[in-house]
Image (cartoon, rainbow, N blue to C red):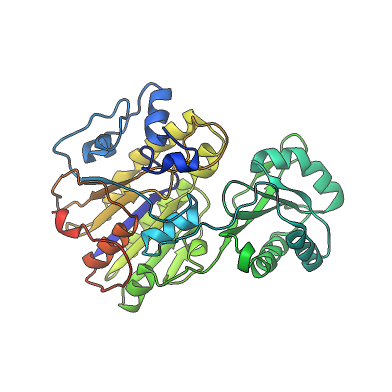
Amino acid sequence: MKLVVLVCDSLGVGEAPDAADYGDRGADTVGHAAAAVGGLELPTLGSWGFGRLTGIAGVPAVDPAAAVVTRMAERSAGKDTTTGHWEMMGVVLDAPFPTYPDGFPAEVIDAFTAAIGRDVLGNRPASGTEIIKELGAEHLASGKPIVYTSADSVFQIATHKRVVPLDQLYAWCERARRLLQGEHAVGRVIARPFDGEPGSFFRTKERRDYALPPAGPTVLEALEKSGVRTLGVGKIEDIFSRRGLTGSDHTGDNETSLDATIRFLGEADGPTLVFANLVDFDMVYGHRRDVTGYARCLERLDARLPEVVAELGSDDWLFLTADHGCDPTAPGTDHTRELTPMVAFSPGGTAGRRLPDRDTFADLGATVAELFGVERAGPGRSFAADLR
């Protein structure tokens, strides 16, 4: 059997039950993006029942539909990439990763500057594109890396490729990862290379994420131990610290990630899981509050889904979901606490049902494990019996 999980990074479908606790009351990434552009054209997702998950202008609530659909609420504390992905694979966090709304304390910055032998610029929450616009010229002149964070638990290091070679940037990130433990154990250290000239700097696609190892055993590890070929696409290998993966392709955008997904499915021989993150929704459009770009990105995915389905047999499955929201119409530039979609399609046919909302992302991992006939520990209730 072949199974593919496509994580549309930030594709929320309405406020989570506890959205108010995060300042995200009323958030609806898909619904608001569709309304802002006067409607979406999603013939594939529409026929699968995507319009049954939230109000989506241009996408009717088809019933019966070609896929099984539901929404999932996050049980873990937080609304970041690492937390969301870990929960999908069975690891629920009781406490959020630390965040730094005022920048990192002196003890963190002093240790980092001592480790790399130079001072830093920035050290505050910021939009990545804005902070390189502001401090990029000074970085070019001084060689000091730009360190910044966001509302997420991240320690981000931005350097110009002409000033700091990629290998050096990655080595600095690895040193930061070793330093950021205990009370300062951020979810991810992120390498943010950029290029260009003052006034026209741009981030490049050699980003790398250095996440903490998962805080417990994952479904990925259970699958790998049982002989399932587990393949990560995009930043999946970084999010899980390469644990539970037999192979990966560290792609940098949606198009190359879909290309890799299709290639892995076509090469599959035996039980195979392809776990792909489509980063553009979040990185290129959501955080930048580009509502038109977000809408067009979703339509582009819809146009390519038939290519993915073409590599699946009648017993195979495609699951489309998300790790959090990032409503492009919301104030600020941060993620939003939202329900996420779960769309389950198989060329062999489905029950076409709209299932009740799930109370944890871990139900996805439990379902994947059951479909492969693999026992796993941890939370989550499988909905495999409801798929056909």
